[in-house]
Figure 1: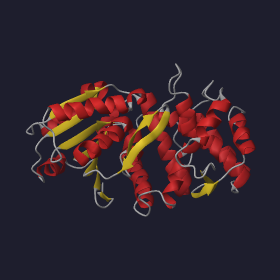
Figure 2 (figure 1 turned 60 degrees about the horizontal axis):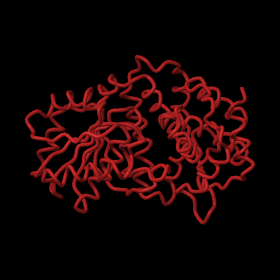
Figure 3 (figure 1 turned 135 degrees about the vertical axis):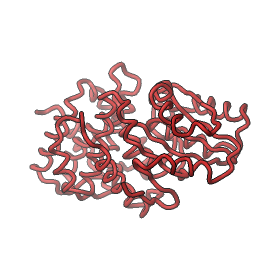
Figure 4 (figure 1 turned 180 degrees about the vertical axis):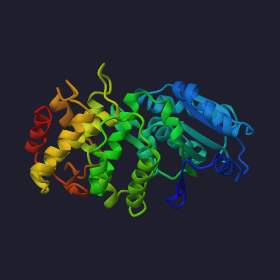
Length: 352
């Protein structure tokens, strides 16, 4: 698989692990840490250790899940690094999903004003989305990714053998971002994805490569989200509000599950505002519901979801900013929808 150049860093997909060892040897790091949670410590760390056993590194373990992507966990990470002699000449390897990558990168770039980090994403979601583009951060007061920075890793190392460690639900969550990339930029890829009905026994490497390539082409043109990069937010404006609303419930949603609802509802708004045809809207809704059947109760508290929308960090001067699609494979951004369309979209989600 060709190496994807995101300048100044590169994304390696199923490369020989000798290249990873070379990454670690390029600089004389004072310390090397590996950030894990209880799941990646059990299932993924042995794989990493097999390939880099000759290096001395310290394990920093945190609790898994979006619930712990907060300042308290950051304090644990910073404290460990401080107490164990890490400095700005150290390296942190983030071994895990989006939470590990977002929070580990944030902690690395804010510790002593910045130390190096490498992303080793182990979930499909983090491999195709979270690990690429430099967005780092944590949740704050039930708002997704409210505190953070945009900064680059030294490298992103993707190996699809890590996907074999995932539960089916986590794999399905990651697939949502692949669907998003196709809907905003590549109609041919969408036509191919529509043929997938079962996520088991899929050869992921080519799909991951194409998905990362789409994101890379957008990000290199607009790193700090001044314009074009906003199209990557399709499905995420409502999706993040829905995810935040359900974050502390018993039936909490994984990121990709919330984004699946976001893509359906924002496709409805696209039909109302940006020219998406009714036929394409129904096509999108039908396929996404085939992979992600209706999540009952997810939209029960409509007013609270709308309140969270108003505080979304993508808004400007109090106006809701949506990224929508005008046809499958083409997207637009900075669309301000009428509140009535948002309510209609939430209502239409449950219609068969």
